[in-house]
Length: 434
Image 1: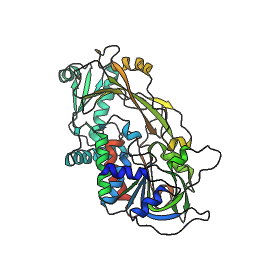
Image 2: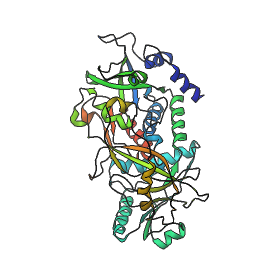
Image 3: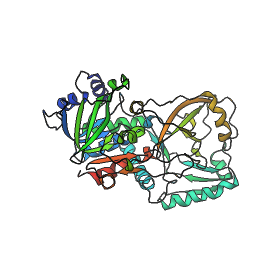
Image 4: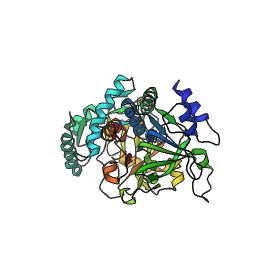
């Protein structure tokens, strides 16, 4: 049923806007017959969520559960094709983030909500636990700092153990000390997103795929969104300004566009540029373990965090496949339209494996030459750059930018998946009356 709905949405095409047809066919509450001075149709709607990644889907679901009429706009042909499908699929405990930060609060709350949701909706997941390891004496103080930080954040069950004790748990592991986080786990992200879509639709949400928000303007202190079919962007030659096929005027807009969220915000004419944080992109590659029939680990294995990430770690999927990654490669941004179309370079070069072997062998010395195969790559949307201190999630409302009904989500990287339902709850509680 859900698949047929998605396919029917994807098949809609004509000279008029996909969104316009969907609004009419699904009886979404709108005004009628209005148009701008250049003939572009204008429609008033209740809530628009931009981006159908796991965070956008969680937000859409939460808003519909509270009785709002929600329209989700996604430039791709289906949900979850960006960050949400290119990550470690780890449920984080909440250890790494500064106390009282949004990352700490929403990760811990989101983890609780996520485990509960997965159990109630039969989403494949497994609370397998994580070992964060110190492989050198200089890393031991950092490990203790992580434990203390996790305790401050309300993470339960943390245990510091000697390397010999960790090795009894994981015979292939080598370390001096390890921090056990029993509440960490893994989840089937696609099944989670599919469930969120279904539940949101069942409560009245409408999804419009192949539909891109290309910008907007402020009118009477509310944001009007400029909408175009994605196929018109794919054929755009760059010689003329992008023109919308429709203008939507929502009461509430959640900019959950992931990698392109800051790029899109810069195209909201009337939004002060000073409130949009700088944008950085960190590419990370994953390699899979081949030539083995026995999984070497039962837990997630993480080294001490590095600049820009959590280090090349061991993750397991629910089928038992072992993945190593991601590394951190700082990359340049791309032009606006390419960003909207997610035309980042996701290739994984085989030669990069030579950089992975020495990092992995610090804690897994028995890793054999030739056993790493290219897996996949993901890109993290960051608001801090190389050798800069990590920055918190940015959830930006009217109190920051002054625009009624606009919520910008910037820098929703790890632990974005774990935090997704916490972020949704936060937005629905704080901005529900917009």
